[in-house]
Length: 434
Image 1 (cartoon, rainbow, N blue to C red):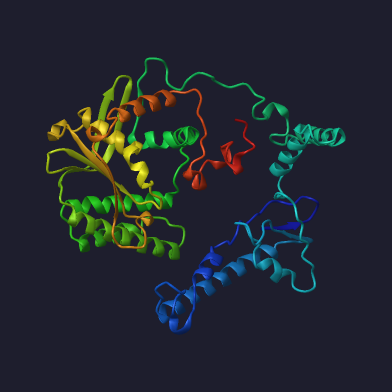
Image 2: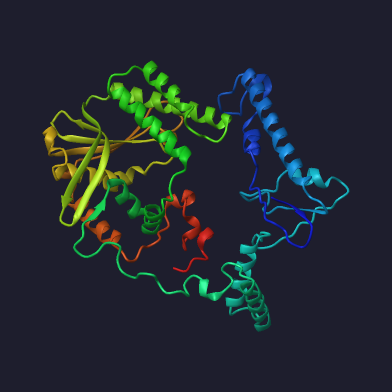
């Protein structure tokens, strides 16, 4: 939603996407049924928990309404309030839009095929699109070009054609890695590049990736796993998490409490799995570094274990909300590269030179609603009909990482991709020329 106090004819973009404090989502999650019962088919919250949740939702809603009021009262001559979206989209107009208008002011509803934001970059984009669209009438294209010329003369960014993407020459068309230079990669990067080469490039080059919240949570769970492996009790692990939790920034107190409860469930899943695991633990957070031709594989394994045959089993602890399909595990890139590293002698100092498989231990939302970890296993490379597939994959990925062309691929991770606005195969980035 845009709340703009206008003195002349310029409308600054102060868009607030969705609910400012996430109150809508919280309010929808609160179900006050008979005697404190939850939604049908689910375990209900206690009456006290229902009341607390309702009071929290009301408090946050009141705070959001106050902030909206503050923004609205900053206007001196005219107040312009706009919103984009609809009830059937992810972006819905704020409830405060109708509250502000009341019965005296009509709310104008404009139905268009796409959103139009009140901002200079959006205006420039629309003009550029109109000027370049050969399907538009010549008069429209000429008018758009004339307006772009005005904006370019005024120094507006991206209005001049010399700044337009795909019209400028490449700064360097050569590969990223010079011929003869080693290509360094990690098992997780092999998996990322296999899913989408463009996303891997943008994450590796500019650091676009997980949010701080996800990194914080993953770091805490991995640290708890290390403590448990050293013999710490559940109480000791919990106390240590409590010690460091207040140093982490989760944005708000209520979200921090929600993440703390999630962390507790993850730790519980891991501890139960750890206690029932029959294999011998050899090392935790163990670094690896091996070379195969011009490719150098580096990384760190969460857990290195030995099975009853004396073979190495690499464990990768996962705290995310998605998991690979069972039919994908046999050729899971990250697990395969871990096994290849074992075969190349990454853990010879532990007398482990033969891979006995690898596992993903899902302790996050991907584990489901139960309090048990979900274990996803990849069989030993020697047992695969094509045992050389991991080596072939590493060589193929290394050649692709060297550049200079990086392909964008549609995959399940597109939904949460942090660089979607720069991807030509994603609706948010379709303006980018392939």
